[in-house]
Structures are given as C-alpha cells and as structure tokens.
Amino acid sequence: MSVLPRTANAIAAALAPGREGPFLEELLAAQAGDEQLAVMDRWHLRAVADTRRTDAERARAASLRTGGRAGVAPLDAVLAALGGAR
Image (cartoon, rainbow, N blue to C red; front, side, top):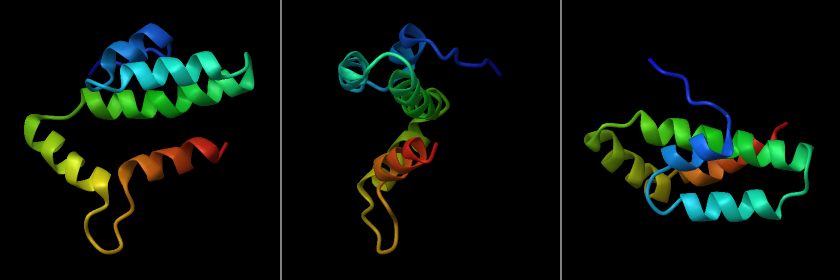
C-alpha cells in the first residue's frame, strides 16, 4: 500500500475528476500557515478516499455523498466537519 504525500501536487493528482479545481482554489484562497495546513488536511482525506476506491465503491460513495437515506449525513459534510475539528 502506498502512502499519499501531503503535497498540493500529490493531492490534486489523486482527487476524483472535478475536485482538483475546487481544491486548488481553496488552497490559493487560504492564508499561509495554519489555514493552508487545514485545507491540505481536509483535502488529503478526500484524495486518499478517492484513490482507494474500486468502481463499485465509487458508486456506493456517490450515494453516500448525497446523504440520500434517513439519518445518513452527506460524505462531504462529514469530511468538512472532520477538517474543522482541529
């Protein structure tokens, strides 16, 4: 199992299609230091999740991401909450 480096380039390359742009925009908008580190931590979690999925898992993750079932929080909301719990 390889470890995904916590660099902007590695994170951007590992993200699912359509996520690289928002990641880079958020990173560039963040102030240097702790704010940028928080962005990197949050998006690193998404990148790791994106790189470890099979096609079947991607379909399941897409349904989880929407929070379609009662009592199921959208995946992006959970990841955002984890990113804010520093």
